[in-house]
Image (tube, rainbow, N blue to C red; front, side, top):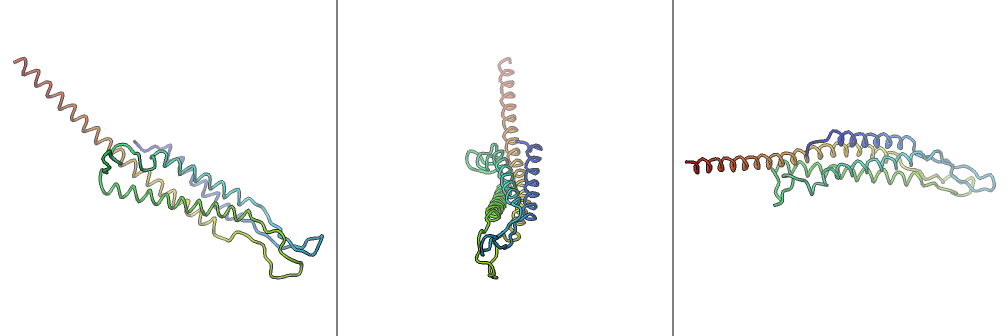
Amino acid sequence: MAISITVLAIVISLHLIAFVFAIGAEQRRSTGKVGPDKYDERTFCVYDSDASTLYGLTAFVLLLVSQALVNGVTKCLCFGRGDVISSGGGWRSGSKKLAVVVFFVVSWLAFLGAEICLLAGSVRNAYHTKYRGYFGAHDFSCASLRKGVFSAGAALCLVSLLGSILYYWAHNKADTGGWEKHKNEGLGMAETTHREEQNNNAFEKV
């Protein structure tokens, strides 16, 4: 299976767009201020835009689609053709096995970390504190998402992108190499059989 430029372009685009949305979510985090209720003496929290939640969830979905695409194309490491995993369970070489497994693990760890940050940040950002106490109290604050959660998700998006590209490349290199090897072996066997048949025909004519 040759490396598909289309697949790479889609994966890179989805990851980068998710990264941009994650950065946007960090910049648009919802913040709240304590204000007095004009009808009684209780205080409540006034929050600004919830755009951060939408940005975070959008990045979450885009990253999920990209990861599903990579693992769908490579059949999640388990069902490749050729010598990636042969019928006997052997690999074409130890170095290729190690590279594919390492990149596979890195891509998944970074993906899961990014998804956790994006989802947790979106949920926390959507949480709004309502009434906090009575007007005049000075020890009340409004709950808000702490700084850096979406930034961590954005950074892990880039790590996931790198891991996915390297995993896809290593998987296809091992997969194609094994297929070409078997193809060449099959051609060699066919040529040997053809030569034997020619020799037998020549012997019968004599």
